[in-house]
Amino acid sequence: MILGGAVLAGGESRRMGRDKAFIAVGGRPLLQVAVDALRSADAEPIVVVGGDAIAVAALGLEYVADEWPGEGPLGAIITALDTLESDLVAVLSCDLIEASPLAVRTVAGAVGSSDVAVPVIDGHSQWHHAVWRRSSRVKLRTAFDAGIRAPRFAVNELAITRVLDGDPCWFHDADHPDDLPTPEL
Image (tube, rainbow, N blue to C red; front, side, top):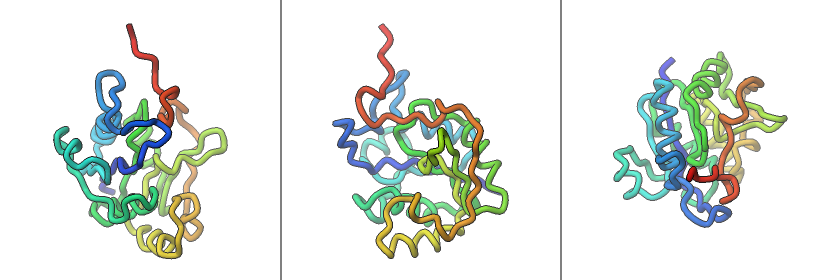
């Protein structure tokens, strides 16, 4: 199976107060951290869905406009699945502090014959770190057209593999300024 990658960067970052995709952690923008994890997991091609097209291009990354900007992450996932021709697409959010290629490979390796593999940490499915079979876009689009905007509510008709192992740090995201690591002095 060929693995493509997408990073969702179109959120408004209201709780953070500034664009999360371009906050530097460890000297790199969070967006680049996610892209590097995908690249190291051998995902190719990799696109950034939504967000600041000019800033994304300045990082030398491929930008794809979200087909439904401001409509939530499900539309961005569908955009990624419509854009990439890979059998599988690893979709990460742009605010993962320690995005890991091992996590991407682990989740991708668990898909099997399912439509999607999603890691579960402390009983919570991490839909912004899932690997989707491209063919799932048809059922996701049906859910989207019915008014559903969150991935967790759009997967009722899909075969799901839940990945129950992995380091919780792989999935730690930054929603608020307090979620960011303290800068080293």
